[in-house]
Image 1 (cartoon, rainbow, N blue to C red):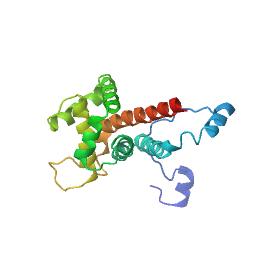
Image 2 (spheres, helix red, strand yellow; image 1 turned 60 degrees about the horizontal axis):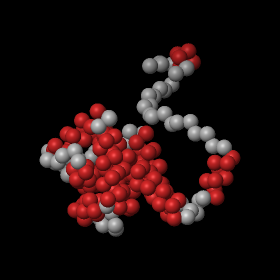
Image 3 (cartoon, one colour; image 1 turned 90 degrees about the horizontal axis):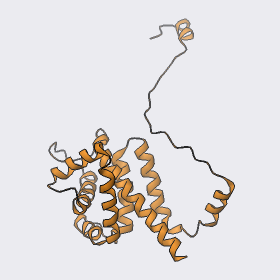
Image 4 (tube, rainbow, N blue to C red; image 1 turned 45 degrees about the vertical axis):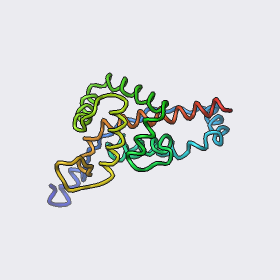
Length: 195
């Protein structure tokens, strides 16, 4: 701690901070890519909001705000596969009825099996809910986690999100990211095939 102006001038350090973040991949955009993006803007207009949620979720993920990231990815899933349902049991039923969504979950389970840290945490979360690592279990976990995180109860025995425990929800946010990414890619494929 500097006690006077002379010491401040010698030190020249007034503040420091440490910041953790995921590095952004370098993006190269050439003229053809930019031209194509502009010319197809209207073609993909129906995905503007889902892609905006994806971008926000990805930014939250890179900032270690896993609860916020989970919500943004969940909104994509609910919007594209929830058939306008909002109650947990109804959304879960809609997800279960969708063959496409079930395929995404199977794909995600395969990826989980290659990611031991996330697999361990997801298995813990499933066990807490007496569910298995299968399509129905993951669908239930995703929908139930949305319900748990959306409401706060000052009960230490209940799953809850706080500004202090984002890390506990990293793995479920990672699962939601995978599902949301597959959902958006599927819609892009459908748009491309219809035009």
